[in-house]
Length: 421
Image (tube, rainbow, N blue to C red; front, side, top):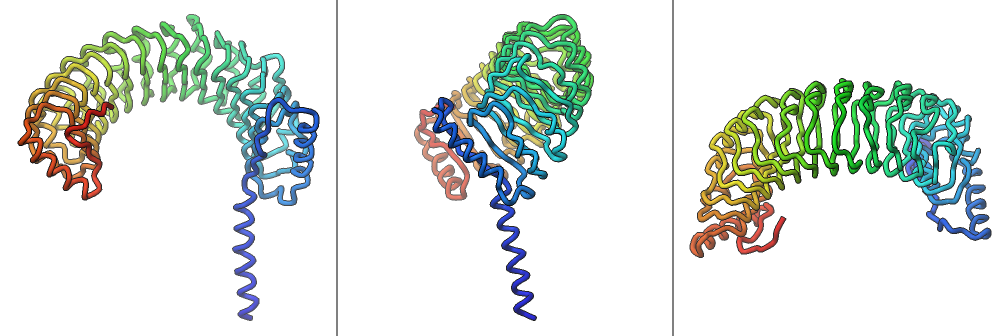
């Protein structure tokens, strides 16, 4: 009896181990410039894959860079398949039998040289994520609405110039990536996207946004990094569900007032612009948790910054700040504070009130004194204080305290470091 029980346990663990081993199949990457013999090698490999004995256990197959012109029919026999990767091939047609794969939700077709005419889409009720990046699309693929469950569409690194109205027919679509396309947004460009919750248009050479952006009532995340936007339309303030917006590396010379109407905003990225001030009305952003305002031209900060009770991360490095307001000490949820590469001369005493602070950087300023009590902040994990104007005696005392912190596993930077961040 004990022997039978032992055998059953051994069989159970052996089956689990086998399931883990065959859960994913990765076809070895082969050269794109294949001779006939090497193409035949791929065919032989596919034949072996076709006869794989554990098809019912496979959830993911990658056939990248195999010079395929069509999706092999044996794929349809992998009944539990969820993810298919055919990037780097020469595919043009999505076969109708894909609809007979009940669990297939993700299909990658990047780098297949696809144009809107080459890509033929059949009716499908399972695919939720479609990746068409790095192809040759200068128009939106036709018949996308045939993918009845499509939620996420990636069209990055193509040659798209317009957002056609027919994309609105993809009623299930929620996430759209258009990064690195030379977009020209006409007046009603955003109208078909009213159901979208996440929209990425990074590096799209955008100079302005049309008023129709107000149509994106369900938008939660908007990424507009690396464009040429010098201002935002007032209609942005009507995106009342927006939680995250990135204006990283644009041409904003003044804080966009329309952002102050976004009561649900949690993350605001204004890195690498030309801002010289943050308005007092910033306090209206009651739910803000992360503010990225580094690499600007800020001379001062509003006292109302201290009223952002939920703020956890504040990045103000590489500005022109000479002091910080006392109200900063009221940010009791703050965990990250970067003030490095500014012009602070007097130590910001409010920092000593920030008991949740884990990551503090006040290096590369002009501080003539830093109290050793800074090393006793209870939650510190990272502390950078180097490259300030301390005299030798104070530097020695402070360095001793920092070495004690280092022994406790806290990341520090030597006070004489010349490293920049």
